[in-house]
Amino acid sequence: MKYWVYHEGEVPGAYEARELARLPGFSAATLVCPADVPSGERRWERAGLFPEIVDAMRAHDLIPPPMAPPAPAAYVDPAAAVGPDEMLNATSHKIFRHVTELMKELENRREERALSQSLQRTVVELKSELQAARERIRFLDDRISTIPALEERERRAQEALEQVQGKLRGWEEKLRERDQRIAQMDQRLQEASQAQENAMRGQAEAVRDQKRQAQAVEDLNRQLAQKESTLAKALAMIRRLEMELAHLLPGLPLGSGGAPEREQAAAAPPPPPGPAPETARAPILAAWAQPEEPKPEPSAPSRSAAPMPHASGAVAAGAAPPPSADLEKPAPEPVRVPPAPDSERPPAGEAPSPKVSFPEPASGENGVAADAAPMPSSSGALAAGHPPQAAKDEPIPVPPHGFKTVPAPWQNAIDGVAAFLRRNLGSDEKPGSGT
Image 1: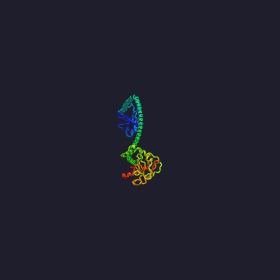
Image 2: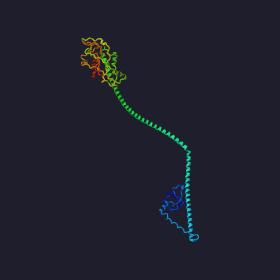
Image 3: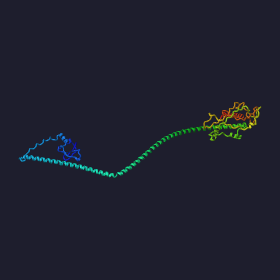
Image 4: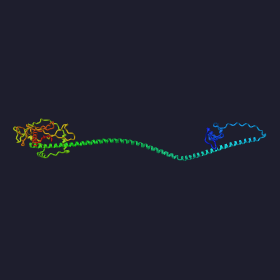
């Protein structure tokens, strides 16, 4: 238990009993007060009245041994005579008793003074605390008036915060949608990049294909020009052959045009080789692509049926003159080239190469067969002993190899022209070879 002590005019803090016994100048007469007693019920008493403090003082040898009780005074008769010693003792005893009372009064006054000073200090402290509390209350009162405005501001701030939170949620939703759109756009961009790469690769392939096609077209144009040049040469050769036939057989009609036009066409120089215009290619391609109806194959006329005419115009003995109907009959229909088989057809986009071939003449003098029919002379007479071949109304048969069979007089004339060309031109190239 702790005690307040009144020591040397002051009230130091609460001490334990052992601490009080060790204080200098502390005695059993020193005033103490229990610290756990409320301030309104405190009582200052001497330390010797508290057994705990007494035990502590004894433990530290601070309390002298108790004095023996005084012996009872002997009864003195007042009437008896009083000596000076007795009077001195009585006076000393009275003075000691008076001093003791004064000491007690002084202790009480000191205690009251200490209590008053402690109370004054307590009052001052309480006053300062009260003043601080009043100021705090005044401050709080002043702040209370601002509470409604603060509450209104708080309410507005809460509403604004809710609005901001709503806007923030909306922005977050828009941000998520924008992220999704960005992801979709990235995916579309990747797809577009892939498509662009594919398109660029396809364009490169197309450019290469176009180059290859252009090269193929150039090759085809060059081949077509060569074939057209070959065809022009073949047509020029045919026109010259027609002129020769016209000279050999004046009465034989060779085409729809007259002799002057044929001579003029034969006299014209052959056209120079070069790429033919598109208008000239279309009829050739159309004629090549147009199929020809199959025709029956009649028996080919014998070459020995018609005799060859002599140079003098006389006909061989025993030969009858040719009927006038054969010479005056109009020329047969121009022969079309049959379509080639699938294996011989040119690829798409390439002009066909027409084949113009003449049959190989039989071996004989000047390239004319010995049993061939005689050529008619300029006067129209035939060799004797060779009757003329009767004309037939059957259509011209189409051989399987793409060659055309012509009547015997034409064949004999062609053989003669071929021998004439070989004899006069001296060329090793065969007529009708397509060059």
